[in-house]
Amino acid sequence: MDEKRKAYRLKEENEVTITVISDRENLPNEKITHSYSMDISVSGSKIQTNILLPVDTLLMLEFSLVALQQKINAIGRVKWIKVIIEDESYEEGVAFDSPKKKLAEYIAWKQNSIS
Image (cartoon, rainbow, N blue to C red; front, side, top):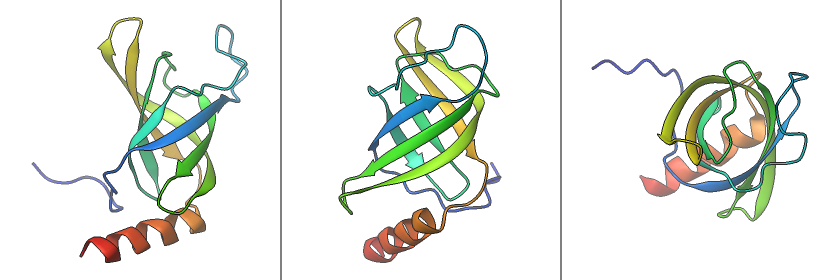
């Protein structure tokens, strides 16, 4: 299978706080705090949540990067959904609106420390 991704994916789990910024009905207004990223790149991330976020939902993501003990923010849009456990657990692919310099530096630093 050919790799379609343009950017290196860092396979690590980080806590992520999600704020829905789409103005769609039936979406949570409060921050979603019981979620985490499963992999991350400068162009997007796979996240796991306990709330179904429809495709095209616009999100503000605040990643808590344990290795750096700091947070990085990104705005992205849900591109795909996978139901893990109905009404309990979901994976969503989020594409960032624009690459983040801090995120790129973090991924490069982690990539160098791995090799």
